[in-house]
Amino acid sequence: MKVIVGIARMTNGGKTTLTNSLLKSLPNCCVIHQDDFFKPQDQIAVGEDGFKQWDVLESLDMEAMLSTVQAWARNPRKFARAHGVSVHPDFSDTHILILEGFLLYSYKPLVDLFSRRYFLTVPYEECKRRRSTRNYEVPDPPGLFDGHVWPMYQKYKREMEANGVEVVYLDGTKSREELFHQVLEDIQNSLLNHS
Ligand SMILES: Nc1ncnc2c1ncn2[C@@H]1O[C@H](COP(=O)(O)OP(=O)(O)O)[C@@H](O)[C@H]1O
Ligand SMILES: NC(=O)c1ccc[n+]([C@@H]2O[C@H](COP(=O)(O)O)[C@@H](O)[C@H]2O)c1
Ligand SMILES: [Mg+2]
Image 1 (cartoon, rainbow, N blue to C red):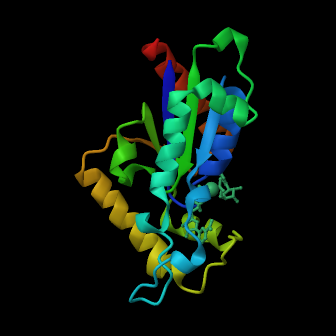
Image 2: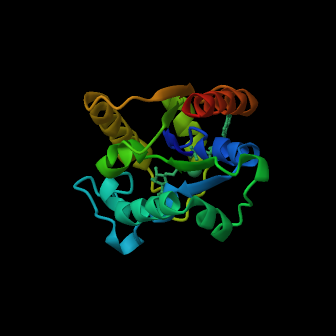
């Protein structure tokens, strides 16, 4: 059985934190981080607003991300080995892939591959506060959050809803432990339903 789980959305919603906890608890579980597929800085367009447009789909090499997912799907055992994940003998027929990132459900070739699509949200003020404490490889210029990050979040969310993409919303203001247990239990239940 092969299962692909999406841990998506809001910047600073807690995706990477939650994903890292799940990886330790789920058997034969590999991960692909969307952040690893940002194009180089000189290929990021500058918008009419003067900001580099990091938070649009075109800033990510989604074809390369899809190829990586396909490599896992062709041979999850080989993928696990190559990524240092040992295959648990008691669960050798179960393979889980977590895709983690802020724009997972807006790229058509990927969207139907998920068994479960999680969508972490936190209120605007909390998101902005957490973001202000983060150090990205390319630091945020002043005004980026309100001028680019937040409007793009809203635009893609509206499009996703209009396209009828089904997601499981998660309240990112819950504690790390509560979120972890909620999602772990939910994934375990959906594994039982698949088997
Ligand atoms: N459940 C939570 N409650 C409070 N703070 C959190 C929670 N999960 C993550 N954080 C904090 O929020 C920030 C962003 O977390 P991170 O997992 O990197 O988010 P993302 O990958 O969605 O951008 C970090 O400082 C992290 O420690
Ligand atoms: N990793 C990078 O090269 C890079 C560069 C500039 C901005 N970012 C930011 O990363 C965010 C996505 O990552 P998080 O969801 O972990 O916050 C986007 O909102 C984007 O603005 C990342
Ligand atoms: Mg992250």
